[in-house]
Each structure stands twice: as C-alpha cells, then as structure tokens.
Amino acid sequence: MADKPREQTAFMSLVAGLRTVGLQAELRGSPERQEDLYPYTPPIPVDAEIEIEGIVGFVDHTVVPSPQEDHRRIATQDAVAHELIARLQELAAQAPGGGLWVTISAGPWLGAGKKERERLCGRVVQMARKAVERGKPFVDLRALPQGPYPVPTIGFCDAPEAHRVTIGFTDLTVGWSGRMQSADRWSSTIGEMRNSVGRAIESKLQKQLARVREVEGEKPIGLLLDSRPMHGRKGKPEPVFDLPPLIIRSLLFDIAQDWPGVLTKAWLLSPHGLSSVYGDEASFGW
Image 1: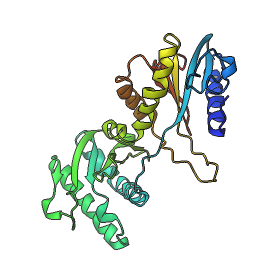
Image 2: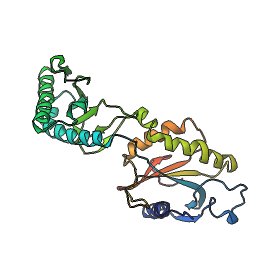
Image 3: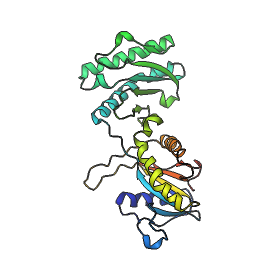
Image 4: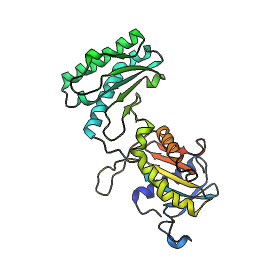
C-alpha cells in the first residue's frame, strides 16, 4: 500500500468518495510496493490497484504542484484584485455583455503605500467608467504608469451575475499568469499552465503510466490528482495548487492528446471534495 501519509489518505478518500456516489470500490493493493503479490518483473511503477464496480485497474497519485512564483507578487495581485473587483461590480453590470475584463500589471502596486494604491485603483475605476459610458474598450495612453509597465486596459465580456469582473495580470515570471475571479478563485490560461503545473502531470503520463500501459494494454489506468492543503514532514505546508476542476479537466485533455491510449480516468481530490476530471465527466467510474 501507499507508504506516505498523503498517499494513504488520498486513496482512502478516493474509495470513500466513489462509495459516496453509489459505486462499489475497493483498494486491492500496490504493485509498486507489494511486489510479491504481482507478477511483474520489474515491478510496474504505479501506486495502487483499485476495483470499481467489478472492474480492476491501476491508479497513480500525484500532487498538483504550485508554480514557483514570487509570493510577494502573488499577495499583491490578490489584494489588488479583491479591491478592484469590489469597486467595479456595479459598473460591470452596465457594460456590454454584463462583464468587465481588466488587464493590469502588479508592478506599480508592489511596495506602494496606501495613498498610492488608492490613486492607482481610482485610475483603473475611472478608465472603466469611461469605457462603459462610451461602450468601447478603453486604453488611456495619458495614464501610463511610471516605469516599464504595460498600460492598463479595459475590455468587455459576456459574464454571469456572479462573475462580472475578471482581473488579468500581465506579470509573467515563470510562464503563467494569475487571474482573480469574482468568486475569489484563481485561474489561468491552459497554455501557460502546461508549462508550469502541467509538467508534473505530463511526466506521469510520459514515464510511469506509459510504462504501465506497455505492460497492461487492456486494464484501465487512472490518475489521482491531489490539491489538498497538507503539512509535510517538517511541519510546513506543501506547495500545492488548488485549481478548479474545469481548469484541471482542460489541462489533462490537452496533455493526454500527446499520449493517446495511456490514461483512462482521472480524479481531482481537493478541499472541495472529489471531482471527475478526465474520461466520462458524468461518471466517477472507469
């Protein structure tokens, strides 16, 4: 069986989650760690063998790693996004499509005092108001921030009432950009995610699971993605990334196309529960 606390609890949670939705599920063993129970030489590199509704397959576990980003910049983006989303809600409802997409750089806000932050926020709100009044996307070239930062832009988008404002940051430090949605959730574009978070997932398919598929051509192969915040052995939080299932689903689809036939199913285990993120979206089974 799994020999790490995170893996152990992850597979226990997977089985419990499958049973909760009415499926029969059982953890049968670990080909990687219980070599004497499996006829593979050398042992196949997969964490668990699981039976779901009478069908036996293999499942490997991996965390959704957090990009190695500048934490000070992330904290600044977080604070700025919260402030702007709150200030722009009413304006966004009047915009074409009922939504605003605001693109800014976090750079001018880094290290700015309270008065300077207020001035920067006020400038963006003023730009948004002019854009809505004119009914056209807006860039104020006269309001170019000091320093080598992109000019803030205001765009329109179709948006539901609960997600009227999206703040896009142009700052790219390791090939990805954060987005703060109105529901206080980060997301980002799939292309950017593949170069950072996607590397860990792609490595699983390319190395371990592709090897398993070579040995077992017919059995289902699953991947259990884990974004639960947990503390490591030294008592520090592990660097995991709590992404919405929709983002993980799109990312997996993109990666799996490069490794056809390897992956059958994938689940996301997050602070919000268990989600099906690859395979039949309507089913938690194989």
